[in-house]
Length: 229
Image (cartoon, rainbow, N blue to C red; front, top):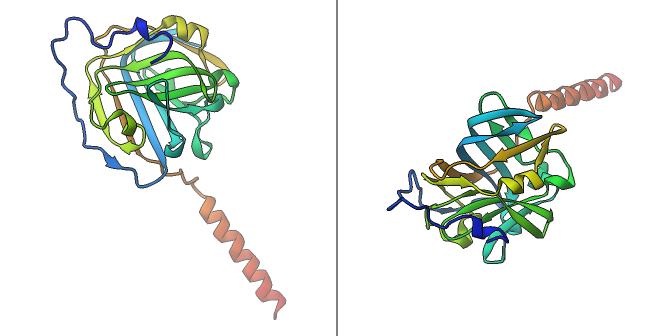
């Protein structure tokens, strides 16, 4: 895992077994671009200096499966300046009105990575699109199907009752910047529920853009017809 992996247990004491909830059989992605979302419950921290407690947080990534590679025993893909494939920035949603699908600013300090191991998913800080610094947030005890090599390249979803953050110090050293303000998280208990889901990425159509194009085309055609009279 990372240099600070020793601070996070691979199994959480007191949990005799775990059940993967709503785990779906992995199916091959039908496109090179995937959209994946990591979700944690009971998140606490600060944004723009204002504290929030026990909120759900989701982080959404758009990435090219061709950019996933094996590094230090994990499969990773990087987001330079917090920006993903197709011009889509990493987006963060935190309940309680804190953030709603807010895009990471295009800054070097937002360079991050998404990673997968045999039974975990992680979100980590990076100093470049190939240099991993350490774990920001992790989902433990994830389903072992699909295997690690396929977790970031197939369409699947799964939930664990033991999703956990690690390294409040890492968040302190490598906070995210959103809208010019700092987001920091504090560690949560091992009982925090978390999950992952992925799907093919479909670009958002801006309302009215197609109509404007049709109107422009129509006006040009009318002008040509007038000149031909």
